[in-house]
Length: 317
Image (cartoon, rainbow, N blue to C red):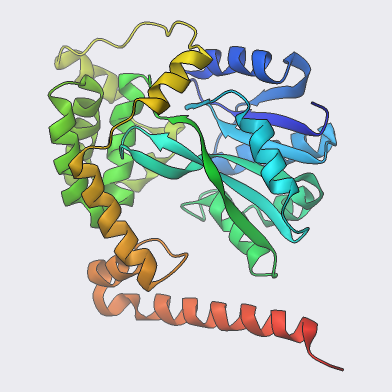
């Protein structure tokens, strides 16, 4: 139990308390800590510092909207421990409610020795849309490696407040606008039996008339949304009872993916096969046309520079 420390990244999620009780059960009260900060860049800085201060071989970071399966952390740490020393991070896979699919995200394991380097790469507040991915990519550009966990380690986005679901729908519709047709089809199908998907749709439709990306930060999301939900007679969910590890295991075991979710996977997979490791590059060209040429040129140069840097380390002298 002493070889890793868990840092929870929270922002008043409905599942935060349950996650804490699960961590008490899974790893013990002295082996995890909750970090709450804004903006997200400051959360990252605090996470890395907490991991460095705990001084364990491995540091786990987990978002408070993730409900981990029993032994998820131990399994991920063992998986990273079996990798070569130049693999600095293992990214967990979760069952994501919004996408109704297994996806990478929400939980990572880092080799603590690399946290200082990651801390030094945290971008200025608001400069990058995905600050943590930016930090990881900076270390990868130095020849270091990251891998995806081979197992599903928990649930993401389950049992959340309507307000957070509304915001998530808003954000996903902007971030994945190249998948909007498929997402809308999935959410409309699921909404008939689950009000969570009605909230996702409501947030997504709102984003169609308000493209303000500053609301990607939860702390800056308009308070007027509370009034909107009240007008629509959607009272917020009550406090969540403590979620059990058995419920998490049963939910994972009983999952059946809808056909509409298969369509999302198909579109994403086609793009990844064309440009491995990049998120939606073909759709970046589709969205932005000729304006995306500098982006493609930059990505090409970035890959070439990384390869040359790696070759220079092994070239004969």
